[in-house]
Length: 195
Image (cartoon, rainbow, N blue to C red; front, side, top):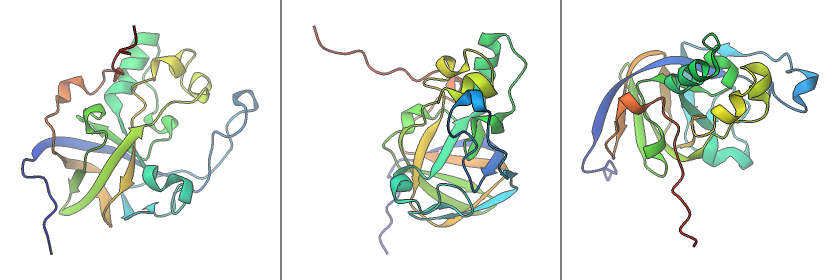
């Protein structure tokens, strides 16, 4: 078997604060109609299946979401948004991202292969795109949260290996250097080169 790990790996201590699993979408339709009352679990551990996602989650095995079946978010981004908007801290589960991390700068990971190691288990993921916020954030977090969350909504990942993620201390393995102190900063897109 060929080892496909990058030659250089950077290791960062992170904490998995929450593991959200929900079999249905809560934010569907118009925000003024209110969120759907759907079962949602903040699990101690989740089973991740390569190419399919988190067992029991709404995106599991859905063809349209294979490249984005697992979402990661840095809680520092939500904390920064609450501070900017002058509100109390948000319940991180309201953002509806699967894995809420502390200490993880996520934007530089787009297009890379990463791993999350927890309690001896390893799950490899490929963050492919930002998890853009929806207008629901103004309703469920605070007015202005939709705009403030842009660039801080996390990343959508394709699960590359089957394994288990656990809540608690973990290690984020990255092929690129990260700055955990910047975990709450909004990712900015490069300026257009058009004249």
